[in-house]
Structure formats: C-alpha cells, structure tokens
Figure (spheres, rainbow, N blue to C red):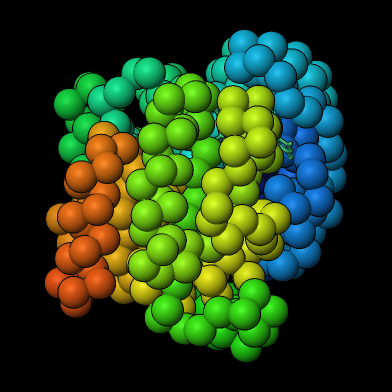
Length: 366
Ligand code: UD1
C-alpha cells in the first residue's frame, strides 16, 4: 500500500488577535498525520507582550519563519508582507494558505497567495461592520473576495457573503476558533493569581481596553473618553492594560494628562482572560473581546458605533455605547443596578470549531 501524499499548508499569523485563533488550528493540524503545516509569523506585532507571551501561554509552536516586517504605515506594512511572503509561497507551493481574522497581515497573505493561484482558507469570514473607515473592514472585504473556503463564526457572516455573491459551497458555518482557545484555557486562567497581584476583588472592578484609531488618534475624542471613564473609575475601579498604540497616543496627544485610571502594562492571554472573567463589566473597542465576554457571561460595553459581530448583541452580553458620555454613563448605571443582559452562548461556539475546519480541508484537499 502506498502512503497518502501529505497535504502541505501554510498558516499565517501576524498580530495579537491572530494568535489565539491559530492556536487550536495548528494543534489540530499537527495532530493529523496527513497535514504538513508551516507556520509563518509576519512580525506585524513583535513586542514580547504583544506576541511572544501569547505563543508561550497558548503552547503555539515556534513559527517556522518570521518575516519580521514590524510596524509601519498600513500600505507599506501590507506591501512588505506581500513582498516577503511571495517567495516563501513560491518555494513551498502549499495546497492552501490559511489566514485568520482581519488584520493587515491577513489581507497581505491573501493577496500573496491569490497572485500565485494558491487556494485560500479564511477563518472568521463574512463579518461586516459596513464601515469602510475601519482598516479591518477593508481587510475583511478583500480577503473574503479572494478566498476559496470561507469559515464563518456566526450566521450573519454567511448572510453577508451570500449577499455579496459568494457561492454557497464556499461558505462553512463552523463556529469560533477564538472560543476554542477560551474554553481550553479558562480553568488554567482561573488558577492564576492575577487579581491578587493587581490588588483586585472579583466582581468589584471593570476592565478597559482601547486601541482603535477612531478612539485614540484624535485629542478631543480621546480626552472626552477619558473624562467619562474617570467618572466611572470613581464608582468602580477601572483597570486599563494599555496597548502600545494607545500609550503612544496618550503621550503625543495628552502629554502630562495621563488618565487617572488603574493603568497597567498589556497582559498575556491567560492573565487577561482571568481579568475579564471576574470583572463586573468590560469596556472595550476590540472585536474579539465582544465575543469572549459573551461566552463568559460578563457584560460588555463596546465603545464603538457599530459592530461586525451582531450575534454578541442579539444573543450575548454586548451593548454598543459609542463614545457618547451620556450613553456610557447610563449603561454603566444599569449594570451597577443589576440590569445587565445575561445572554447565551451562540450556536457552535462550543470549543470544536478548529476540528470542523480541518475536517473540511482534509475532505477537500485529501
Ligand atoms: C492591529 C490590528 C487590529 C487589532 C490590533 C490588536 C490592523 C489594521 N490592525 O492594530 O485590527 O485589533 O492589532 O492589537 O492590522 N506596536 C508596538 N509593539 C508591537 C506592535 C505594535 O509598539 O508589538 C505599536 C507601534 O507603535 C505601531 C502601533 O502599535 O505603530 C500599531 O500597530 P499596528 O500593528 O499597526 O496596529 P494595531 O493598532 O496594533
């Protein structure tokens, strides 16, 4: 009997929110003997706290290759990933390239693969904020139009893709790989001494993250947001791990007026999961955190005007509050008065999304 030929894949990751998505995929691929997986890190995120600590916390193997592109303007960064990845893909000629999420590395890898006619699998396809001022929305639209397998996390994803004319047979509703990672790691996170280290008591603080250009790039918006967040902080401590982009914006735009919140360095995956899971509520402009809080049953106030993840509002614990101080104040009040939405876990967010994805790839490429 002749051995079956291996299925060679290249999996690409570049920025913090990619790492928790590739972790279960790489584990599942490496557990199946048919697959030969090459992991490429673009280097979009490079700080220890933004990259290495996630690989360590989540047991992701060392990347086979790091393109080392670093930070830069969006066009230049995207072009650099494209230029560095092209010869890698040309040499390896994988059966498919797997990309996740919506960061610049995602769209760059998709462009590189499509020019070489290498099929693309997009994990977390179909999400739409319908707001093209968000760089991620452009990345999502372009990646999806180029992809051959579109793995969706929620039913709105499939609806959006069908509306855009993507054929039904390319769309696979598989659930949420980021939730695979959350369910696999929650017990470990709960054993950590994160709260003790920070001097916090479960249920008696709020956690905040903030990094979107629309919130942090202009002085007036940022200052107004901090004004209302400081008000909240006077009622319940607000713990704020500061993203490097936001740290730079605070220094550039607010100078000596550091917000009087409980600011800390960015946390690793497990510490942040612990922080979220015991928070009274979370304030954020992140995409993924809206989903994680929904699964944890922790109320989430999203500091944005829209979301590409509507299931977190319809079924989960998420409320959009934008940046309007009165709305933020009112929604915080509701939570403190015990009126927060409890929500339920959306369909197929059950810890098995990566297995479903790899089943489809094995069937189609085997
Ligand atoms: C990127 C993603 C965003 C995601 C976010 C999570 C895009 C368009 N945006 O935004 O979708 O929600 O990651 O973190 O891809 N920096 C460091 N160290 C690092 C990485 C970045 O100091 O390891 C600083 C640099 O000053 C850099 C800035 O952060 O210029 C922005 O980094 P960049 O990767 O461009 O975008 P993010 O804001 O991190």
